[in-house]
Length: 217
Image (cartoon, rainbow, N blue to C red; front, side, top):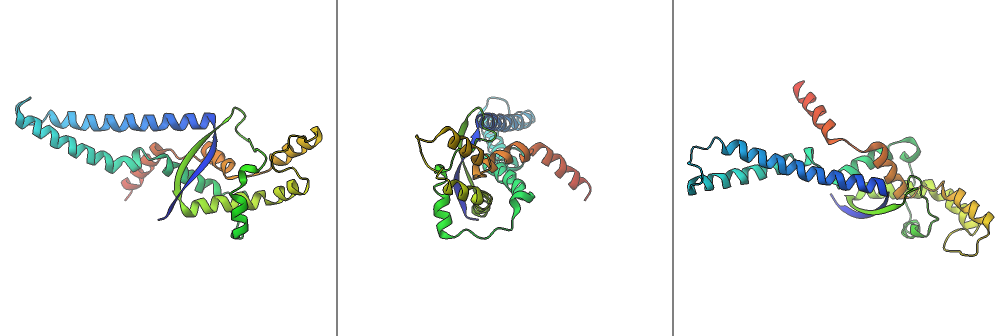
């Protein structure tokens, strides 16, 4: 499945939570690995600290690494996986689900210049932090299409009022109007922030649900 690298603006708080989540995932995987090795090493028949024992422990370590790698996608999924799932959930809601007309080549070009849009800081009152994710190409296209189609009428009004792009000489009234309209924009980053805030998956709940399903089979 083709994948695309995309940079999104999250809130400072969200970016901090994601950093902490990855740290916890790494710690949990390390503990999982160490526990497997320690439990199995205790049952070894070879005398401790002998060459035979060390070779046996090395085999246990290799096996434990493989087992950790097997359960990693479920127990400690990567942020790319979690973000993709959260975005899919958010994009299914009525306001973003469409159906939308496909983006034209011209619209894709204009969308690539979305950095010129007036800032939409919904959910980012304390600042933003850039984070890059590698996502399914189809999800990225769905995200960008929804962002453009929902924002399109607002962008048209902003353009008609000449409120797009850097303008240091705007009147106070024009600034207020620009900010009012900017609050209605739905760039990809705003959708991502809402996905993180309201639709972020919980791997632990998924494990419990999976165990329940398996038990009912």
